[in-house]
Image 1 (tube, rainbow, N blue to C red):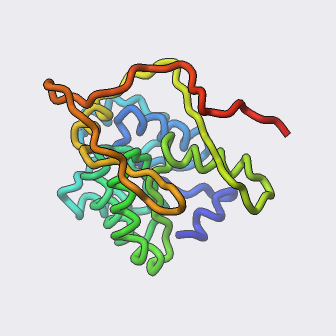
Image 2: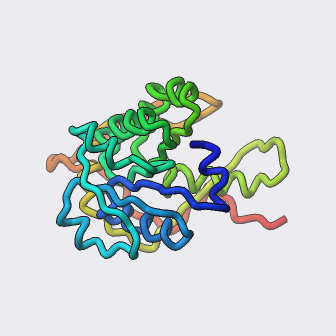
Length: 228
């Protein structure tokens, strides 16, 4: 399947999208179609798939995580699957297992550190043995930062430090994001000195919601952008 994707500039392979009727999934399906890939839209609800307004030529398949046989049928003919359905603590494991069974590549867009860590811990060896790529966190939080750092490095072989600042002028969490936030109660980790360390436990307000710091528009410890 790796060769299949490497030849993508010729005959574009089929790419399956799980959670295709969701907010992110619809974007991914449309972008795949725009780039000439054959998209397979997979979801748990046939009615939601039917009204998702996919581009022409997109195959729609109903499959559930609880039914491995339905996942196997949905992934038939695909070279890779992109998981856009959270909470990824619940969806990643069965989809990675299905991808490995089908010997196709797996990507997801999780921002759940626990899910990404579990995917690496459980499936790194199996993915290597199968000759497929399994990459979690290829979305806004994760993959984008990695690409920015890679682009900034260019042909450099070493850097003392890389700082990436992300600012949003507005943000409205989707229903899927809210559900994921309720499900993802694991303590976050940060990388320091090449090692993972856990952040202090976050305090909760009497309502049960996490206590969040007030919004800020400026950060004094973030250096100004530099140009070469």
